[in-house]
Length: 270
Figure 1 (cartoon, one colour):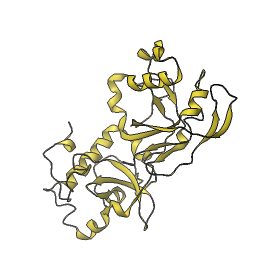
Figure 2 (figure 1 turned 90 degrees about the horizontal axis):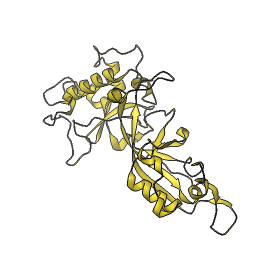
Figure 3 (figure 1 turned 60 degrees about the vertical axis):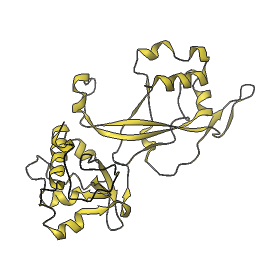
Figure 4 (figure 1 turned 30 degrees about the vertical axis):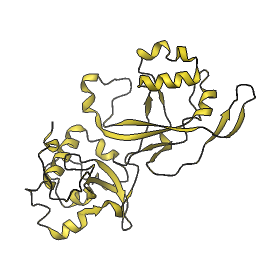
């Protein structure tokens, strides 16, 4: 456990009862207000701590950053590329600044007015620019249900499911932030006794999943051993995998998915 996750920590920020964002959970995100452009922040209670301002004011001195402000961007990718050790140093430094026994921010009233932004006054953006993503078929209950829908229920799981990390590559350009409106997708579906038809889906579905956001890159052709996976995971987001089940039933034979899965996937902003 890192120092930032110590359950005994207390913050000088007023944390509403039942908040998802106590000092032990400091998730990164991208926000903007009516006064500015998108940039990086951390959630604490019902507030957002502006990391771009903290960087400019020298609060991250001692951490090996490039000369540019990696938090003054519309995506977290520049920060993620610095690697897990620096990311961990930043998280611990933020935790230190927010603790009740640290006056570095609370003694600077002018700075405090600018560095904390109420979440209600901010619009949250997609936190990372996703170059690629893989959607894993990892729940045996879900795989059994889908197999029962598309095949013989007595043969719901194919033989390879228990051995392979069954997955498909999704459409990265269709990832949106939670709450963003989507259009009902159009595609082909086929009744059991009819000809394929084209039109909007009649069976729009979603699956609640968890997505792993990775940092740094591994060279093409070089894999990351399981023993080092924690060194490459930056964090997690909730992931809403939207699906057009009527399209998927038709596309699934023998490959797919295609239009059934490529129209939208929602992720949480933090």
